[in-house]
Length: 163
Image (tube, rainbow, N blue to C red; front, side):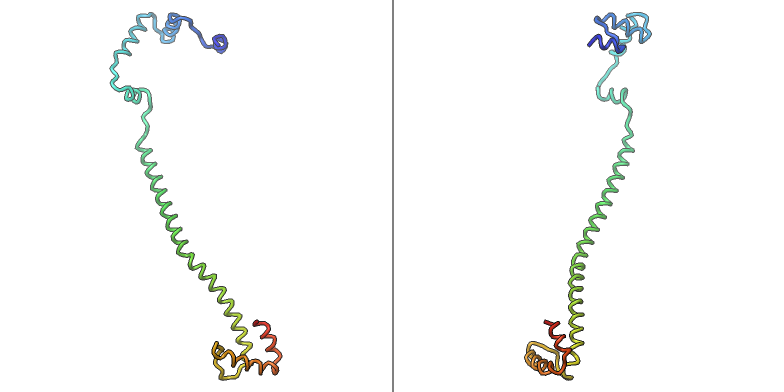
């Protein structure tokens, strides 16, 4: 591994004095005493809290106020969207009975139209002052219809369509 690192241009120092001399040349320090003085000044520095030291000397200060404002705006936007969705869901729930009633109305209107056509065609075959058919006078109506049937051939067509 050492040979492969050296092929890549990494310097290897088997003992500390060689590393120390190389480090001094990088820092442009002339003697070992200057390196010792540098180490002492760094170690003398008082560090009460390591995390505070790292935050103040090594990390960039984050723009927390901007992030908080952005998060608040996003939260407000999400709340507005949620409230809008809830309103729309309530509106759909309110419209559901109307749509089912509209379907019922269309079916009933279709049946009513058919019955009106039948009633219009039967008007010519019924006596003038006869009350509309009901359960109580159904028998009488059937007798009148059978009496009129031989006279009018179109009535048979209507009767077969009504069944």
